[in-house]
Structures are given as C-alpha cells and as structure tokens.
Length: 255
Image 1 (cartoon, rainbow, N blue to C red):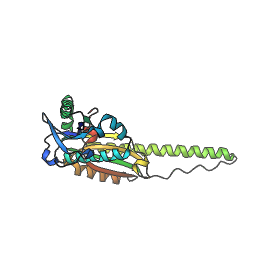
Image 2: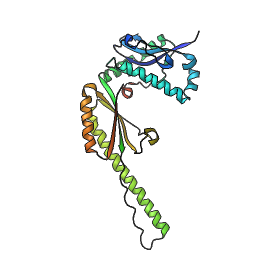
Image 3: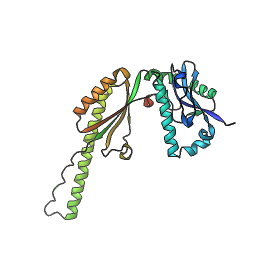
Image 4: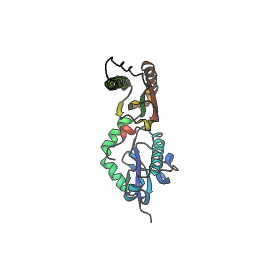
C-alpha cells in the first residue's frame, strides 16, 4: 500500500467542503477540508512516492514539475478564496505525515493563523509594478580643445555615467513618492525587490514592485486612485494585477 501524506494548501474559516469536492489538486489528488476548532484546512492526500522528502528533492529541481505543481496549488487556493472572506495560503508543498499531524501543526499555529485571518478578512491583494518609460540621457560634453583624444573620451564616459546615475536616482525618488501616494488606500503594503527585465518581459526597467492589501469594498476607490496617479506620473507605466488571495499578507513564515 502506498505511503501517503497530507498536503495543506490553506487555512480559512467557514469553508464549505462540498463546494470544493471534485476539485483536483496537486498530483491530481482530490481536494477536501480538514476541520480543527473554528478553522478549516484545505488539503489533499498525496502519494509520498512523489511528495515525500527524498522525491521532493529531485522534483524541485525539475522546473516543469514545479510549474505544474505551483499552478495547481494556486488554482486550489483561488477556488477556496472565492468561497470565504478570509483564507491564509500555505507555502507550496507544505506536507505532513497525516491528518492528525496537520491538525497538530494548525493547533501550534492557531494564534498566528487567527490573527492573520482577522487581518485579511474581507481584503484582497493587488500587485502594482511601475516601469520607467526611459528618458533622454544628458548630452555628452563636447571635446575640449587641446585635450587628447583618450582624455576626452574618458571625460565623456564619466559624464555619461554621472548622468545615468542622476537620472536613475531622480526616477527612483519619483517612484517612492508614487508608492506613498498609494499607501492610504490600502490596509497594508509590502515592497518587493524589482524584477529583472528577463522575468518581467519588459524592456523598461522596473522601478517599483509592491503589493497592497485592499478592502474589497474599496477596490473601486483604489483603481480610481491608480488612474489619477497615471495622469500625475506620466513618465511611468503602472501595471496593476489582482485581486489575488493575500499571499503576501497571510502566509506564515513557518507553516
């Protein structure tokens, strides 16, 4: 008989397990709910031949496997988030030896989970990424009369570097101001490291990467503010995505 474990996607309140029945989770395992006190965990029973410690070390090096698993994990979290006002997603491949072991861990985390659910209740996460559209660089200085060609080239290169640095600093300061203009519209915020252009798929550099926890009833207000800021900060492209389950604001450090 295959050895199995309990894969935990998320924990929430007032989750109707019947709504999730028939949903396939990671590894095509059926999704179900697991009750503990006033909390409900969204779980699947998984084969440890694929999700056990030894197998995971190999599978996590397979980008195709990771992508498939992450996509299915996210699909389950989204479906569960749609039927409750507060859901705390767990990290990818959070697995326990049994349902009882999962309940024990939820009991250990109960206070933190309850606080997280209180914090995100009735709120969703929105991603805001800001890209610089690119500005003309300062004109290189004209070669000084009597100055040797090599010296003039070095002076020109230094001036170009100083100009780029000054332009980048000005652009970052403007992006910082835009971020603070958005803060009052959110219940909580997090700034993330800007993505490399190879990941963003954009030619323009990303100057701000942030997430905002927004009350669902204030989402229209949030979008109206974004539109106003697009007009005010015309040198930026502002990309907004969401609403998402509040991964950035509910995932525990050690689920």
